[in-house]
Length: 265
Image 1 (cartoon, rainbow, N blue to C red):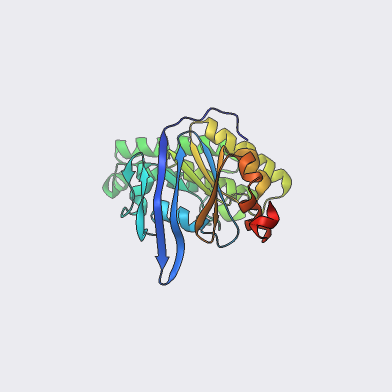
Image 2 (image 1 turned 60 degrees about the vertical axis):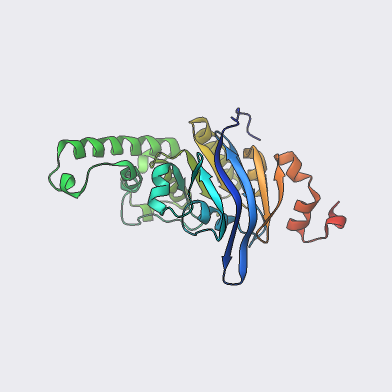
């Protein structure tokens, strides 16, 4: 588990959120929060509602009832780009890069989220646009360095190895200057060595001042890097606590092993 101090300031709150798709309840009265400076894990079996929860937080889906607040401000009803500007960035289970753009260009796209100049400034290469472009490129290079892929900035994203594409997507998310970074199964497809490197990277990201919300199936990774864990099953929250508390929770064991609570205890 992470040893860095965690503040008690609530950065994001999921307040009794329910979401229905027709007759299907994907999330049922979900309630949790993440503190500033924390690494929070959200785990659960397939179909538990983890990615749906991410999608509600980031504006992909709208909650049927309940509220999501970021720094005390309601997010329900906001468009995705507005949520990004507020300071929430995410990655996806399936990598979403601009395949025919270079690694550097992909990250610079993320930096564009906070540019204030418009199309006219870009067309005429006005001083403010050139300054923002230079600042965006410098930040993109710094983030490629943080990810350990600074030497691949001019390679097309599609030509990068799978692990580097994962790191590039994280770099692009960080380029939006988020307060909260949401990682959706970042270790998918990684071998044990790559997972160990990812754990170190997540800690380094948090140590650089970011708060991290992590969805992940790999229990060893989650137990090794998070401060707290929220467990979902069939759209409901069944447990919340420290990695040690979650590891010994009979309801969590039952959810993952498919046994009754009484048999797991």
